Image (tube, rainbow over all chains, first blue to last red; front, side, top):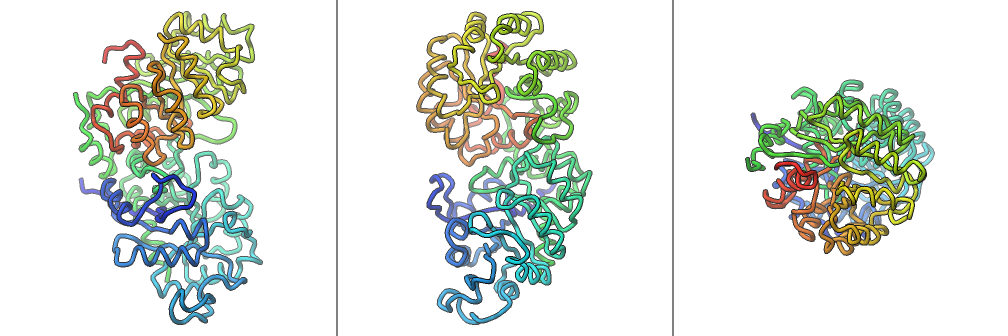
Length: 261
Length: 272
């Protein structure tokens, strides 16, 4: 049988100020690990954009992955009201068009088709008053928004999914203890998806596919914090159809990114 | 038969379970649980579906207990473990759970588990039972296991903080295997290795944290392949997920085979 292409929805590069050295990764190390584990493409964000500031980290990301066809950038974003995110930031950081008033279309023009949010790390809440403008634009362009499970409450997720139903919300780094909450919000919101790197639940993928359909799940590894072989083997062994495995392995993420226009 | 790691990984890349590549390779999962959990939902957590998961990936045997024995009334749980093993005696090996909060029961429950119910591994859960492993309340059970060379598997209250005490117990009872569960917890790994690497009857169970990047390679590099044991925490966790950490680890195939089953077979006195 042919190899099924894998598109990793959850990779991080960069040198962390806090992470131990074995979790630090350069583009070269990431590509080597992707080759070792048979991963075709990866969507990446930069650790500096998470643990420090998105403007510094996003720019580092673009510099470090420049010219790499297998790596897709994912920017970490902040609420727009403080003027910290492009296009309001100084021109020397991002080049021309710094006064553009539609940040999402500005990002799309630079090949950014997915964003990541870190409300707890970056000190804000996911209330509509804070996020309304950006979520409205994300929804207009159908740009998926990734968020780690420990960065928001289930009620915040429920509210955001309800009020901005055109935004594909992707829950990532979930852990295995969430199903009682997860099933409720998956049932309620068809715009909610989940990346599987830490959903290491016994027959968990099988159960979600049966209840909600395979289109809700995205393959991810959580590299470099987690070893990619774990999530790959979990998906390979799931008792679901070959078609569903292909959707999870790469089809669903490709579809979401293609729909972001 | 030697493990065919290349074929195992190729099967995974083709989105197939690596069962053909594991044919003839002894795989023993040293760490499983049966039944529901208080804090979260696990689908298909019954014993038949646990054996089904073992069949999918090619796990020969599973050392297991009932979660009820850890979270609930441990006597009821030990009965549930025994019933599960009786249903699949060729595949399951019972772990008898001892609860130090009921010291008056301890000797009788040890006798019941290991002399009547046929269990072969003793389980201590220092977190749920809220007692450090060197608490005197455990002493009668540890002495009972040591006298019969029953392997002890302990979930310490904190891997790093308690590993030194565990190593001292192992040194005191040097003919008994002391298995340290969740040994690859990344923040504890260096401390666990520091205290336990030189104690030859301490074994390292990778359950729960093999996914942490390079933890397998770090552990095997530090203690060698002879004392590392494969465990999955099924049905708490996903068996193929944990198996994938071993299949894709950058270690020798000789060590991989030992970790997957040969080491645990030796502890259980099985023919390899």
